[in-house]
Image (cartoon, rainbow, N blue to C red; front, side):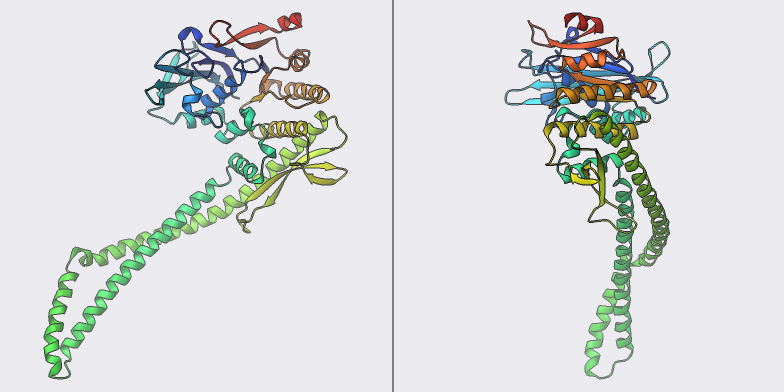
Length: 468
């Protein structure tokens, strides 16, 4: 089971670029709480976690916006670094470091990624082996280490606050997200690539065969006319035809046609091999499509079971009994290959209604949050990390209390396998979580009064109780 140890951030957003400005977050198990006022830099921590694990910037953000602005630092360039120490799915310690740089030029700001490194540590915490981004794809290495796909990391585990309500977005966006999570299109694309290659080989063989046959037919016709002249008048034409035949013979001696038979034999052999491979691929594709449909059906059943249970535990209103995700076959579905459309429905006394456009802002936030939790329960069996950025937005006090109680139950249920990271400015919500005695320390993010840079301090939970 993969879990996080500590994150170090330097030169990102409002975190200063100097060595002394480097800030650290130590992750506790099963719960890490990060508090702070709006605008202090809390969300940057989630953005940094997403960047270090997937290599992707926050939505709508370029590298120049992610790195601390050189103009604020009164420098021509600033460097940024994000480093994560964690244990992989084999419980072995790993450190990954990503470096960035922004240079302020006369008319523009230039961003570039500097060499990144992933290191496996020995029992003493020292690097045993290190691999540079010049040698391997760090993004793929992180997916392998965490045992979670990039799509799940982006859309479920470290979902940005701006995208946290994606389950209730428009149908096209929801389908895109779920297709990424289920990785539904990869095998189809591979099969289509092989089929296209086979078609291309067949076209080449047919073109070559027609060309050779056409030349052979022309030569045969000319030789026949030369041997059987019918009139004296044809005798003059015979000499012209004879000259033409010599030209054709000369063309046939050209390497393009001289080796045509050998080329044709090789192409036919390749065509037959591809044909056999395509037949095998077709069998494999059908078996894979069948397995994917079963996998999809089983997973959606698991997701809806967890989702329904979570909704009944958390939601305090009486207008919705439960919610579920409905799947419908898409327009491009066939009897062997299925595509799916997705929609979230709310159910009251057996009657279903689409939730999108009919629910309140609070219901939308809660439903999206619980769907992500259900997806995490289903797809994150090897990685117990799950983040929530401002989960109480638009929730009333009653539902906030229910959410805190449900989170406590989930965390206790998965105590040995979970590592929740909750970022919030809602101190009442934090008190509810703290009263469950699941956490001993919390992190507070604030702005330094003199420099304006973000600062992270680790405090005992009793300090929060004393201040309140």
